[in-house]
Image (cartoon, rainbow, N blue to C red; front, side):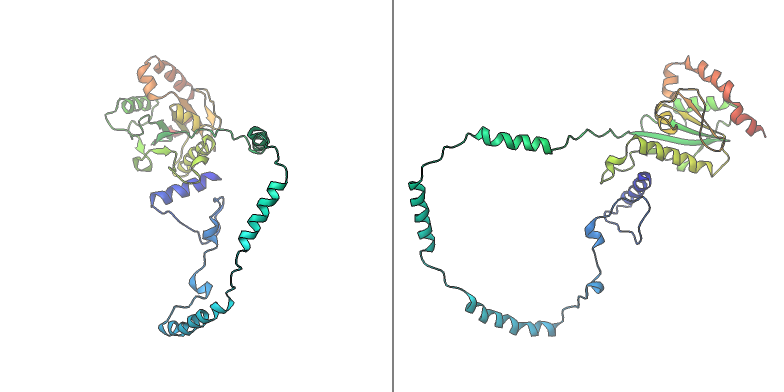
Length: 290
């Protein structure tokens, strides 16, 4: 998958590695440059170091070439060029002058041929840009939008709202920040040949792979997708209705919610979240009680 190569290129950029050639072929990796594949060590090219003795033996060879070169130099033929020019001028005067074609008649077929050969290039899909914070509260994962791209702070109003929602769900109000608190930012690559390959499908595959890896570290029963970007790239499909549980893997359910900023701006949404929470909380509460 291109997602693996995008991650590999992102790690190389973080280490400031511009040129890198693997020792063996990598699965799903981008094609390597031909000049790197053709590179050989000096031992393979049988290039011996130049010694002073070898330099001394080259001097007679240079003198020999210098003496032989003048013998093969041919003398120029005098006035040959001038004779040919006069013949061409006389022939041009004897023949009638051809009628010049208009420029448009010559250019038009060329333009038509170029238009027929040039393919129509469709504009590429825009690269999505977002930042997500991933946390764990008991047996639930939380994937939350970060509109500013900065990690949560303890006094942020949206983080305080998230803690209230966790208390209402019967979970701990002190969630654990995963990935050492570093947000997941897309696009991962800021340049290079794979910059344009970071489309929406690649972003969705990378986000879902990230969630899958966290499932192996702890027992998870539900994943909260909080915010538009989390809902869009956490679900398998582009459009998924809010408050509707969706299967993920291994009896894990996805629960889609509006963004924390939207709930702060529209307090009436808390009623809808509470009603949906009462309907789906048995997904994590039963297992948590056990």
